[in-house]
Amino acid sequence: MNDRREIFGWTMYDWANSAFTTSVVTVFFGPYLSALAQTAADANGLIYLLGIPIKYDSLFPYCVSVSVGVQVILLPILGAIADYSHLRKRMIVFFSTLGAVAAILLFFTTAQTFWLGALLFIIANLSFGASIVFYNAFLPSIASEDQRDSVSSLGFAMGYAGGGILLLLNLILFQFSDKLGIDTGLAVRICLASAGIWWLLFSQITFRTVRSRRAARHVPPGESLLTIGFKQLGNTFRQIRQFPETVRYLIAYLIYNDGIQTVIVVATLFGSQELQMDNTSLIFVILMVQVVAFCGAFLFSWLANRIGTKGAIVSSLIVWSLVVIYAAVALQSVAEFWILSAVVAIVLGGSQALSRSLFADMIPDGREAEFFSFYEISDRFTSIFGPLIFGLANQITGSLRAGIFSLVFLFVIGLAILITVNVPRAIREAESARLEEVAATA
Image (cartoon, rainbow, N blue to C red; front, top):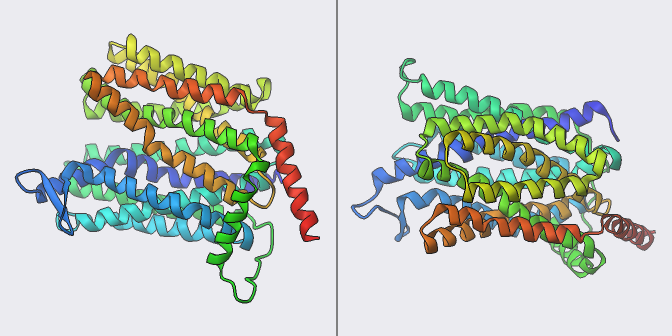
């Protein structure tokens, strides 16, 4: 544990994959796919898949939902297989490569092939989520308990840096594409492919430095990895009562992270609709968030050393709550939006990094991938509930500010549950489960 070269290699996967999140998911692919689908839509704005009508600007959200739905089904099974077989490194290599290649192939998404682009995005986003499970599962193996906060924070910081740098380069290309003789569509396609190339190239550093801890386990006669995965998963569900504190923490994380992710998603909508900010200004806000979040990850790592990991997360959620309330009640100017976005960026890096490291302390040795699959599912569920709450509040009241204010309940409820989590007891429960498994196999 705590090998500096291996830790650096591990954090470089955050650097590598964040390019996909920022350049593809957040900025370029959604508007581009919607524009292509609009050109193929009928007079009612509908396109058709196997006779099913789809509003052209709903295609991208549907792609996100499909990829998340498949993850909910597959990730726990994949995690169980990885823990049993000890093949988590091979699995992260496979899904990372698959996702990166799919992202590179987005270059070929045009008006004639936008359905192919939608399918490639689903594959890339699904592979991204799967690779993150196995990536996170290495954290307890490479860093001792007293180092996990700083290592997890370094990983998130590297992610914000890597994603931000490529996004900046892509924005420069996009802004000056006409002077380079490149039309807008080609510029977007180059930006999409660049994220896949970035992901593929820099992930090689991770693959060459992170070591497998156990020899691969052979499948018993008459079994397959799939049947073993289902059995392992069923065994975990039967034993779930052994981890009440970990389950409580997962519930808290599901709720407050729902609020975090929804704020990220709707912030640009709020800026454009309420404050009349143009797309260029909003993209520069996103870049600023990447830079400040890089610093925030280290700041909260320092804070965790002073008041404990749980205490630092609690502090961040209090700030999140105050930010949401201020945005809903008092935010009026573009300058205030920039300042509030900077505050969000500070707590964003810290709350996410420390949430990951705290969970790593609560899971039994040898079952990291399986437990982190549930963690990733909790993260992915944020594509469902938070936006739904925001949308309903906005639709009922006709006010985006009411939608923003409704999110404070997610932070307050998540915070209230988190406060009740007994972290030392959760660690003892995980250790007891490990000892029982060792005794059973002795």
